[in-house]
Length: 266
Image (cartoon, rainbow, N blue to C red; front, side, top):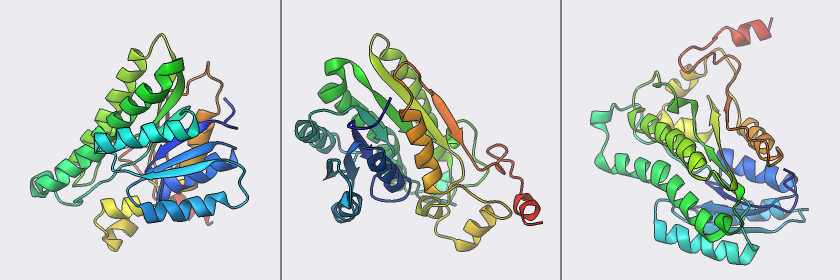
């Protein structure tokens, strides 16, 4: 499915993977609706994306964990854009690592659950009702994680892991429920990506961050954006239902080939 002229709503758009996906969408000729909590960052991103672009770019400052805000923002976006063809659920966060679950605060647990679970469901619910179910066509791409399939090897990931497992279950069940429509529901599962998000996951501990990536090259945000564009550009009768995108040195969630850089540099 060519992205030229398609209307794409992207959450978590203002930095990291979301920002790179937004750039790739504009380069592919898509009109974009950018959702994030920071209006200032969204305004800066719109200005950056608009340079030389011939597409429509709008944004809304939204907390995806607040359904009323989500629904109003989606409704106004649909009215302004004329519809939404693609939803990319990308907004997410991890808090408290490397603290074990019993050392997390209830506020941290609720915040992660609200953004990573409710946020995906609220966005899908609103976009389906205000846009996609009208013509029963569209694509929902959920950015999940390989951590949703296996238990992560590092501490402080129990809530995040449960969130990602829930996203996988939601993606699969929603795909089944939308049988009888032309709405695709896809999952993109990144592995280790060097972004501010991963820095946040390890508690901004630079030593822990460096040790985690020791001996191999992690992915960078443009790698994930390229994978997302590939999935979205498939013709409507083709669904890349799920794609794992990991560094080649990440053999599984828990096994890393830490001699990768050594071999490469010989």
